[in-house]
Image 1 (cartoon, helix red, strand yellow):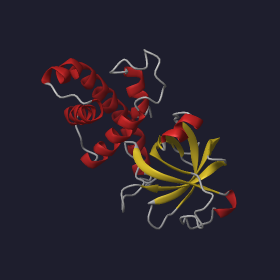
Image 2: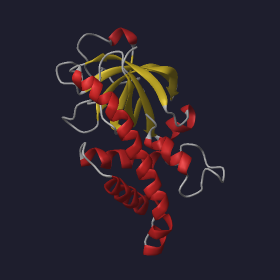
Image 3: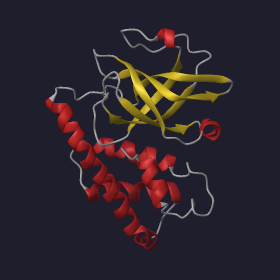
Image 4: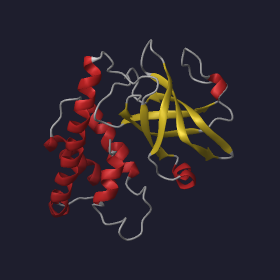
Length: 220
């Protein structure tokens, strides 16, 4: 699934990418948009997504006048339309998975991770998206899992490719949907992965990041 961050980068509403800004220029806005869409539930409209974009842009870029909003109206609608298209594309995959009784992320699923914080983590590793595989899922609650990324990430002298991932919204589960899911990431050792996913302890010497995760595909 094309992530919201990718769509924002390609559409480049403010023209910053064209002027030479880094590719992660809109990652912060992408995270805010993903969070807002999650709160809409699974049944949302293009108009609602466009409204989310408008509110995020007002907050991020200080758009105060009606003229500022109207100047970007077409761009907001274009981005909203692309997000809805991706949602419909994923609906087919989601429907197949539902018929098989597997609505939740499962071990072996391919995922995409986009970091948002800390900012210098993104500076060191790039803006992503980083691809990976679900290495283990807590089948008891579907709210936490282990992920192995295809690429080693590093920050403050720590390197890792295994991460403990928890949904940023308390009580929310990793359900396959057409939205990026805001998450907290904490680095792991491969030896720590067991049948029950649990937050690693002690926390010293871990790599932490905030970001979003999206479902790409089931195992081949």
